[in-house]
Image (cartoon, rainbow, N blue to C red):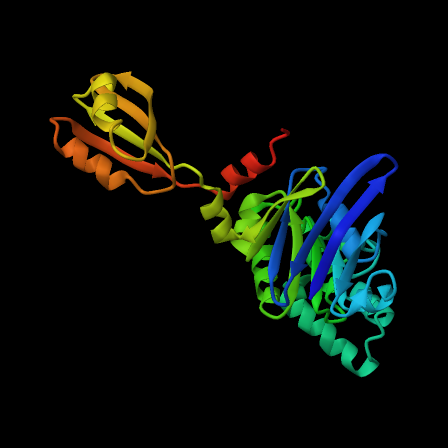
Length: 311
């Protein structure tokens, strides 16, 4: 549905986006992840036609961003990080105004506003001034604005920025419901948000794509090495190292802590293979008491940190 090729954007001498390419299929919820300044917002603004690329091409369906910008905009709803609301208007009046701009037929306008109020959970604030709404409700009104023309593609720039945990959860639920019918692209640096909401992650660092995969595949491919933590009683670190190091797949063993007859060690494995059973079988052959055995799981946060290091 969306195809970007060799997409590049310069601000004077600063290269914000550097020859990136990707495809987004219909019905996907794609998270654009990256640290602040990575180029996420610039990419979204180019996708929506708000910014022109320095070079490269964007096509949406059969439309080119250079030749059919208006047609592409008709397919999209866009919510920037700060929702562009008129704070002196009532929420209902504002959405009614947006419906007029979007040329929603008069006979369908009330029904459409009602549908969006239900979807975005803003029925109770429809007759309050936007200036008096919490940031969470302002984001919801902005989301209703972005969806007024029932777009095929919804683009959200940091949709939960500045919200409290309850508001974040509510916005996530709304995005997931929307994602059942539409293509959704959202940018964020909140990793738990992407993990809970998105089907796929595109990780950006310094204007380049450093990873593009489903959440599950991203974790599996980036795992590299597994880490097992052990807590043992009646064992010294030297004895533990001598007994466990010969197990095939173990790269090294580190001493975390030793006190009161207990030791804690970290076992670094050379692959993502699960070696817990082999470690347990070796411990069974000794007189040590096993107090704890835990394999660290690779989280999106670990992967993100590795992929976005400065070097």
